[in-house]
Image (cartoon, rainbow, N blue to C red; front, side, top):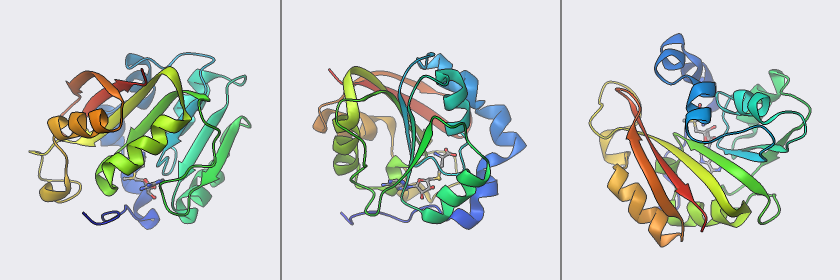
Length: 191
Ligand SMILES: C[S@@+](CC[C@H](N)C(=O)[O-])C[C@H]1O[C@@H](n2cnc3c(N)ncnc32)[C@H](O)[C@@H]1O
């Protein structure tokens, strides 16, 4: 398998912020539904333009540490332009597989529309490293059968594939749910 597949380009960031996306995938409600609470340290891996990151920082509150990780400096510049709250730290990862975040420090990780862009097990193992024991990982991915938008079908992952990559990365899948016509979620814990 290639080291990573095609990654989303920063110049298309407005596509991530459409009114339609906000309607079918409301960020604050989605994060809370899958366990985000005040006071949790959060990492958004592939934070992009901040679609989940900024709501996550609001829910976690100013006493929590919130990391916005992205492999694209352009995307981090877009996010910075939105003036995220002061407890947000922007983290650039050059290779996409090593995040400058201490091990065992994060309570909640969100990885939305990104797993399919990477070598899954290598990527998930690095996520596991930064998670505390018992921490939650929320993965959001494109449904394989939804064809009108998003990445080519052959690049998409099924929930079964995601669960198998999680198991190989020593993360325990605890929940899977279809969210809407485009996306599904898989939740995992570091046990
Ligand atoms: C399709 S966008 C999704 C952005 C955001 N998560 C959302 O749902 O709106 C994917 C983002 O992940 C970033 N990305 C892809 N692979 C990455 C990696 N291994 N590490 C960090 N960022 C990555 C891309 O640069 C891009 O900003």
